[in-house]
Amino acid sequence: MDILKRLNTAGIVPVVVIDDAKNAVPTAKALLAGGINVMEITFRTAVAPDAIKAVVDNCPDMLVGTGTVITLEQCQKAVEMGAKFIVSPGFDAEGVKWCVDNVVAIIPGCVTPSEIMAAMKLGLNVVKFFPANVYGGLSAMKALSGPFGGIKFIPTGGVNAQNVGEYISAPFIHAVGGSWVCPKTDIAAGNFEKITALCAESRRNLLGYEVVHVGINTKNNDAAQEVANAFGAAFNFVAKDGNSSVFSSTGIEVMKSQYLGKQGHLAVRTNQIDIAIADLEKKGFQVDMETAKYKGDRMIAVYLKNEIGGFAIHLLQK
Image (cartoon, rainbow, N blue to C red):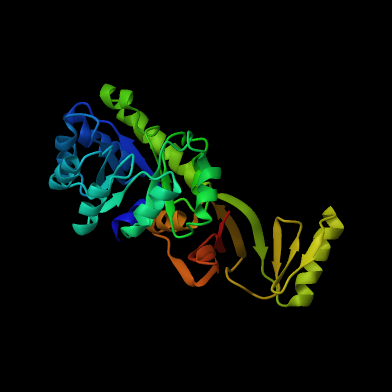
């Protein structure tokens, strides 16, 4: 998996400020325990190079990058220490070109059309949007994605545990960044269990899993209509007929055939289906890509190969 894809499936890129290099590895382990396997160690402190190397040497499951890179020298030093991606608050042509020439993943800060066009000229399609809350947040990025449809954003600044689901569900968002999952004060105080808890909470909010309807298998169209009518008679649910099923209200889908799942299916909605697939595969589930449906180039639905309690699981994009 390439670096940018890894950032995408992680969903959250923690911005980590290390004042004491001895805290680098415990912080990385706390992030991993909370379900986040990427981290951006900032170049705001003198110990950043040592912190990067410590995590690279001791935490093989962690993808380490560096942020707040504002000079070519910092960029080169970070890569020398083992950083796999570079994040800059702004667009510096010299640094970006060096990274492109040396096949190093680079995410420069771009908040204007001119900066985005400069990044595109150098072959980039993922940029940082910072500070997102100052430059217009989701509405600004949505507007920019009109003329620059091939560009994806990693917003930082103003993203938190409460709004991370809203951000990540937007089709023009590649991932989100921020320090809320690993506050500088908690790192310095050694509150690593708290960091793990913050990561786990943010991952839950990021994924936003929720059951939206249950699917009932029947033999044919007549049987499906009979079941839907029974729900209507009992609960005044309004039936909506479709090609392959009849919805009784929004919570019950009556299939017109013996479809997937011994007992039927459960539809589970998520904020970002690609991140959800990576999450589920890590837990041992498999995705049946033959059932995938797309809107443009974005997947919007897919079934898991695994059943739970006799129910097939239909994963849906919110």
